Image (cartoon, rainbow, N blue to C red; front, side, top):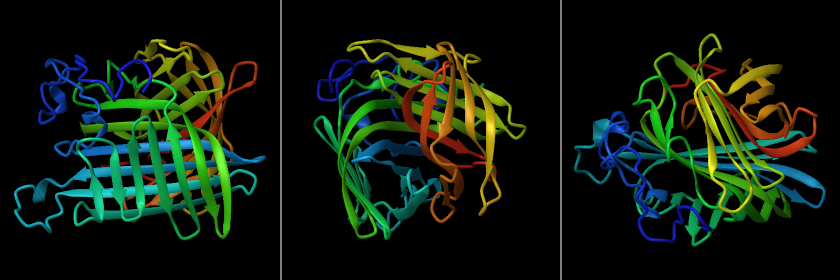
Length: 359
């Protein structure tokens, strides 16, 4: 990594509010902590939920595609005292998807397995995830992402071009009114992508840009929250914009936040305070399969100004009831400024529209 908290350097002492990963997140506001890189690029098995989330936009000639690969790790409290090697102490889930913009089609797949036996793993020392033949692995300043599904596959190299972006208060991202409703959260925007994407029997060389998030938590959602809306956008000038809101069942924001970092080397991030982000739905799309109504186009108000976010195609709903149990919308999207000029591309994620999200 270049600049900032490099994962290849020695320990970085980041005062984040936690003495050790074994402590609950409610201690974040009052204790001192260390984030250790590259160790904290890896799994945190004492935390309830964790995910590594890679999204991006790639081109093959003039053809445009979005892709997503997410690995989840979930701790199973009831099995922690068991001594059997077959006890499912950690579950590993994975989702993969490809959006074909010109074809106006989404392909997606999902998997789940208990950790162990060479089938599923989430390394505790570095970013090294595996679920059968799906993998996400870091090698120096590169990540390799691989997913093989029935109708699509991709094998991509993602090269770091910027330093880690610590979200929230130096890596602790508040998600609700109570301090324990927080997560450890960092991002790697503006990843340079090269590789191969296959649809059916067609194999295409691709290149583009991607975004990686890594987040782990003990208690993420407020009891009144049913889901969230989130964007991670690579701006065309090299900057990075994150924004989110946690919603109640009436659609009102319980909490909101985000960050902006300019593309200049060594630039510091601007963290948005509670109340500085506002999502206003502009257009709805109704899923023909679940009947859920998703706002596929938004006005986004930020301290930087007003933007418009829209999905490149409407139907980017993922049904993951066979793995995580959730149905959500997640897809390639574009960002426009107040003059309606395209200024960035990335992913929009919307959860809790087909039913309240529960971990």
